[in-house]
Length: 118
Length: 111
Image (cartoon, rainbow over all chains, first blue to last red; front, top):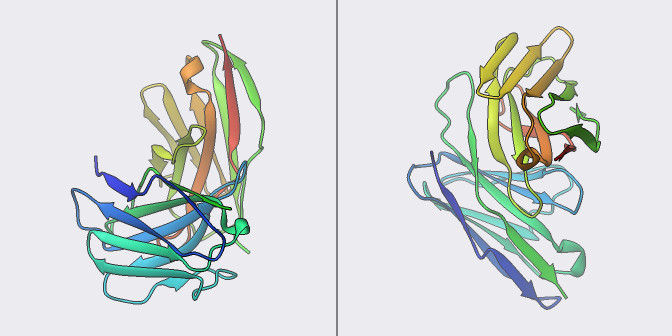
């Protein structure tokens, strides 16, 4: 099956600093990558959809200037949490998909990045 | 707002029993439906997908879809303690490729 990696797997940072999370599709070229956030005991909430070479599409309520997404290639997308605050502490998960126009488009999930902001 | 509803549980079943997990969705245009399993602290892993009305079986898992009732379910036969996890129902939003996740049902399989 397709493999998606994330780096780092966990990070602790001070309030006010910026943190970059990488998402890579290791064995396929992903036309689309998705970024999710999951708070404890809650479900995954889609933050943004990212297509290679174009601007990300953010979900309602997600600040695009705070959560910067760059999808530089078909195998790499990055999420930068700028000026992080304790309320940004969460589990950030990316997924990658090959939109092939079929009846479904499976998303392959990365292992997640746990961010703790002190 | 498009929604996916699941009972949060926990659903507790004895080992060897059938576990039945249910999910309803609001977007009539949705065509693809997914069940993911998520262990604590881990990211979701796909168990099954279904896009045609009826049943789809894969080993101990059976997904059932009823688009008229906007209902999708997952049956786990011969439940094992290792099946204890949170099961997330996800619905692909019509024509957008985005997944809308339910809040998940926590399943506990008692030895």
